[in-house]
Length: 65
Length: 257
Image (cartoon, rainbow over all chains, first blue to last red; front, top):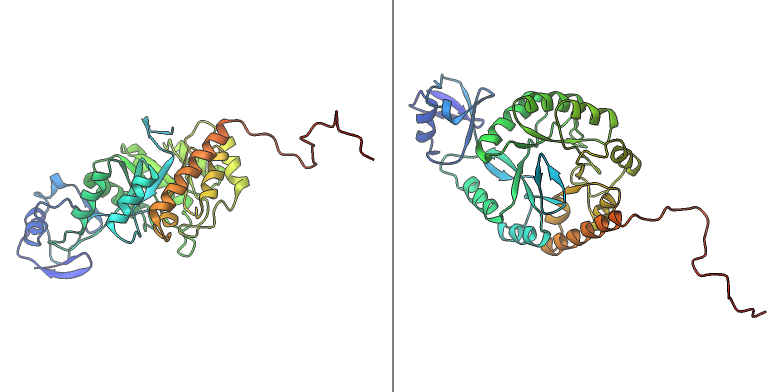
């Protein structure tokens, strides 16, 4: 199905957030996630189902002031 | 030394981690500054990317506390969601809360800031609000649960210094027991010294160091200025006066007419 990852369309096979992250290459990285603007804690990824058109945000540590 | 939410920090300097010419120069500037706190952010990363983990490794090696920010957020919802993401990734309840109200000046939106601060403080965050020097907003942020205030000196990245010294002094006098940090707008070491002389507990700066020709040397200059300003404040400065007052005694002056 097609979702929107960090603002860009992406095709994924997974329907769960935890497996989608693995499929997208984030396995093991220190990331935080939000789906459709709502924060999804790491512990809730397994129970989070993705649907076509969902907006997934994946962020990591970066420089800041 | 300043205490924020019960944690004593070894330095009155807080330093941002953005805009340095290289990671090595960032690390060198931090060592030269003696800063005890580093501000950091969260940004999007592609799958398989290394930028986030490489940066996080570098910051952990500095041995400083991290203060994640909500930079770029323009709404309460964005800021609260970003704070939750930051708490998970960085493993800290500290959050530098920015809710921007105006694109050109990056001026805080005080109404959204207070609301976001209340939500986050109720949820166990220890909020460092980036605010203006407005006394009423400051009082409402304290009511919302903030135990630190971070008024701007001038717009972020402007380097203009303390553009409203009256307002900053008034804030210090109104809230003598609240840790206060001048955040944003500092361009020169003398600005930092002036903030210390006013009795501020710390400064937070980034661009002035990162964009200097020699960031590590500038970091050292700021460290010296902060130390000088704080020492001057502690030494109880004289009161200024409008007219001259001779410092050399008149008595015993030779009559040479």
